[in-house]
Image (tube, rainbow, N blue to C red; front, side, top):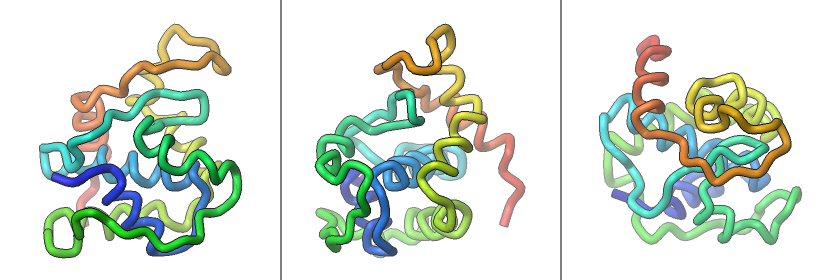
Length: 149
């Protein structure tokens, strides 16, 4: 298993991006890990249903100083993902699927999907929340929409 910062480093080293985009790409890596690998790929965080979409508090603490500006500095992962073919392939697929989208586009997409919506049920649209997004819901939802290679 990896840390969320290992996952984030992989994405940051692809291109500069905002914290929002990094959060959403990292969320999709974890969610699709549940759906396709049937297991967690990170061991140190959960995603919460914040106003602007899924957020890892661990990742937020690491990159919050960037605000709305892009993160340009190359990141050094604690553990290299490229040595793990299954997770490396998963990360490439997530990048191919979502990497061309902006943070705002990814936010809108997550807002339309059941895992985030379920975790925010009963909350106002601008109400803060630390409700955890269920790994079981991630696995079920993304497995159901998977259309294969």
